[in-house]
Image (cartoon, rainbow, N blue to C red; front, side, top):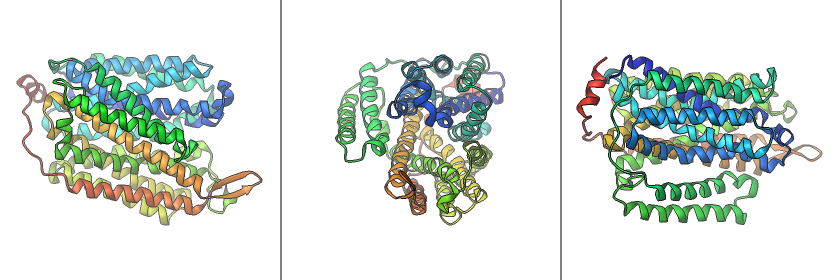
Length: 474
């Protein structure tokens, strides 16, 4: 039986924060990677892309493994993978081993949906909503604080130090997950659908490569269209295969239930809204003042201006919990998406100084903090307990799809509307940044509309006695 549920929640949040933080570690050195690794800029871009792809595949797979073998075991395993991946990166001086390490770091993102799904089993009812809200916020908080932290570490020492720090943090998470997170007997009978894993991996990787590389290759390039079409076809075939399985990787019938389906669609829209400001605001902060609208900040300064937004996500986790308890998860999701959209409206009109973008970013991040907690709550309320981890993992995947689409769309907008800053130097126009803010607002308000269609909470499968005891023991 668990000891201190608050300690377990703190450990899970710290683990989620560490996993999310590793995703943005290389951003401060991205421009220098070709020289550091002795490769081309196109090849070096895969250092970021491979982590995204691995994370997308790992989240639903980790969820299924957690349902089969127990959530605590999978948490320890994913954090151990993060240790190995970070150490491989720290020891790398060439492209291939760094890609291997970054892929392993991406696989560790499965920690977050598994940790969220475990919250319902190890916390007393009065603490569950707050715990889920805090854990959900780590998806954004880790990325927000990762940029200034990474820039500061690079300024202070070697780029390898980034990954040694990540290795140390991951080792602490592994130890704490083993000793402080209770092992609830929540394993369910079944088998891992290996063919389903392979099909999902091929389909997702192909689709997301096409989307994420569209800005570089061009949306009309045969490589982009081929990758996207191939990914869609493979995923359709995979879906047909999963529907014929008695023990599928993803129960598509459960996923197709209206509350789950609409929550996942809302996750795409809100994930898009969250990522848009993460892509656009740092670029606007770092744009040269010679453009007439750029704010001339360094990478470290831009990261510091962005960091309070991450803290807002965490600060609004209790607000989200209170809203879920009073008005329900559906309205909470709508409120969060509306606040997120309001942040973009503020950014559209206030982009003349760093503090103005700070205000807009904080508003948007407050919306993310409110809305992100509501999504897994809606999922957990709508699916059987035996499918909790895999369902939350799929929801996290849909958010990842939204963030990938946002990065591609924002990149396309910024590269399609440019002006000459000097001989051979093209930069986005002010109108391009404003259009990005409009796109982010549209996505967020679309999330409000989608969330409005989610039906009220229905009957939830009761937790087994052993799990009810675990929740009430505190």
